[in-house]
Length: 266
Image (cartoon, rainbow, N blue to C red; front, side, top):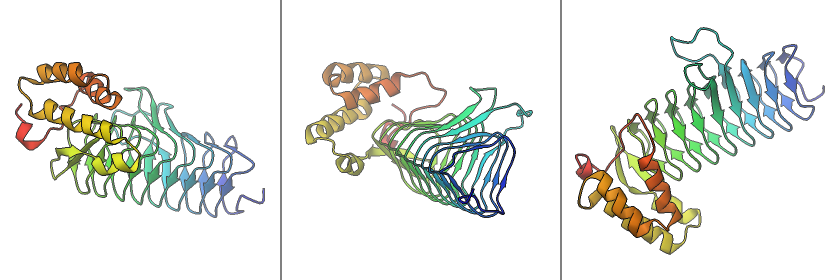
């Protein structure tokens, strides 16, 4: 095929769409599937049971579908599934899942993974997210849609980051970050709402106003957390964005909730 460089290695069994392009000295393993109009640049390694969605671009020295960095992994057939129209830049690494979870690492659509970003085993990354340079996700992390993670940030295993959240650069995320939240710091705390992101994505003024009032009630109101959640639901439950936060707070999780510093003991 004219769109596959003659120095590329495509193992027998690999499924490469006829419109996909494979650059010089790239390696495509036998159990890899590459979708329509995907572009795999030169010096890319794609191995394991890995699926690359339509229109996704993978840049030089990225390594996708390699085995989990988990000592419990014993060669099981686990997967990495990457959606459509992602941009996976140089030196990005993504691992397959483990049988201790669902056996799959999942990446949605329209994401940007900048240089050196890492997605570990069993992570679930939504769509329209940005992981800046050297942002790293440990195992089992869940990143919902429209999340931005700043450069040189690290997310602890099993942490959830809610949709439309913003993580500042050089942050250590040890606890779950609520949807629409803004967290940063060496050991990150919740700094408020991602107001800039909400405005850029077209949220109405009234919805942002309700979110701000609900945030204050949840983290600076009277009573314990359960009481604050209940009263916030009564007052703002009809607002879908506030409901997103309440549902997130009430979900089963192994991690604490990232809170403002002044509310850390609340």
